[in-house]
Image 1 (cartoon, helix red, strand yellow):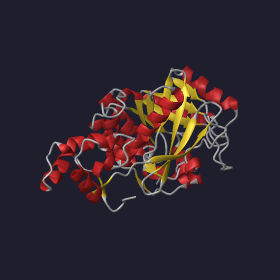
Image 2 (spheres, helix red, strand yellow):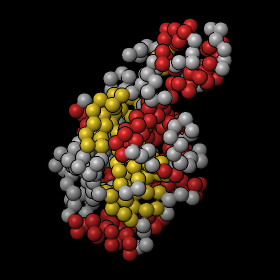
Image 3 (tube, helix red, strand yellow):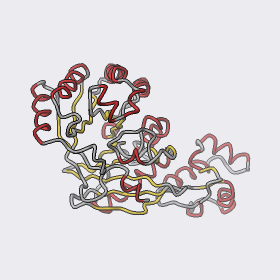
Image 4 (cartoon, one colour):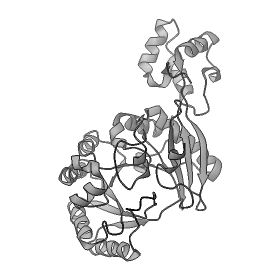
Length: 346
């Protein structure tokens, strides 16, 4: 580990060009170095075979190439594969490959741990250690894509930022990673196949709309009643539902793209018609669809999946009100499926 040295990938092409010139290396080498540095299997400057030895020696002395690596994985009986990925400083994040029909979805992390305090989430048991750099998110996806081709004989078709961390609290790095992964240096995936899931950071949702991002937006809602939401997601006291709804209204007016509401149903928490009607009210105001999610237990006795009849009640009322709704079955139940559980082991 060369943690005291600057990772070569943190330099812009312009800065790298200028740095090389000051040491009497030709500017065109900067592009070659950048191209090598992006390759997931290139872990040292010595592997950059078209660079002269004196430049390789200079890079080894002054910079690092801090690549991530997979340190463990678990495969479920439903073919979901969960990975623990170690970063250069020894910290661990987790990622998941989820095959379904003609899709192969990568669920990726944006932070080590999380600074939010959602009571039902295993990641909230891990304090936020730091943000991921854009190239660490890029590495994560490239590692997953390599695994996807090896295990499923297919590249990743969809990406969801639903792993560890709150993506909008690491906005700059998340956006840059998406820019790179959708380009020809990444896997060339379309922005339309990428979804960013947020717990509801209102001002950042507005910023995304102003920045004219092209990917999809999902919101972990779980309750459209303020009191319940504050109880299960205490941080939301700083982001009132009124502000969240206003920001989502702004998003739709600017982008003309529907929001997906992610929604878990728990016994004696949101399994009643007051909660159903509150959800309908929001969906009627903001063009959206609802994704009802089967809960993966985190061993917190406070949270237990609601009776199946309440899932049906939600489905029926939403459909009666012409609101698009789907049910996402829990994946990887026989492994550490809930986000944060595998990383906790490391």
